[in-house]
Length: 135
Image (tube, rainbow, N blue to C red; front, side, top):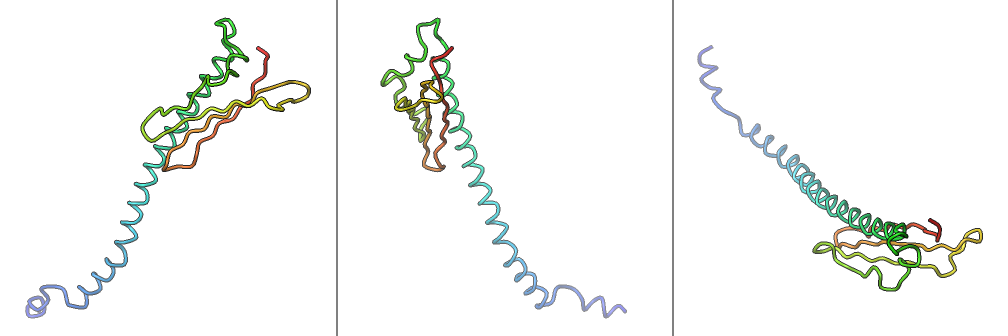
């Protein structure tokens, strides 16, 4: 019995080759999974910021439309150049389009407001709403 235990001191060549083959098959997909998740988490942060910037500008336009007491209102937001394109943060660009051309629904004229935020790493974030000349 003592001779048997003295002969078994390490791994055989076959066992080592099997472990190397298994690791060679298993490690690349795991590394790919981690890098893919890391890249997607960065894109999620960029997208979340873009949504925030779009909501921020839309809220500004809607607040101006509602501030009739402050000399603002529907006609105030329609003024050309009222909301110029800007870059709220490096890499992002924001555009506001307000269109009243042919916008009539059930006899009521309205304006369509579209806020678009661009970033090279994501698809455009676009928010759209309609406003009328009623308070």
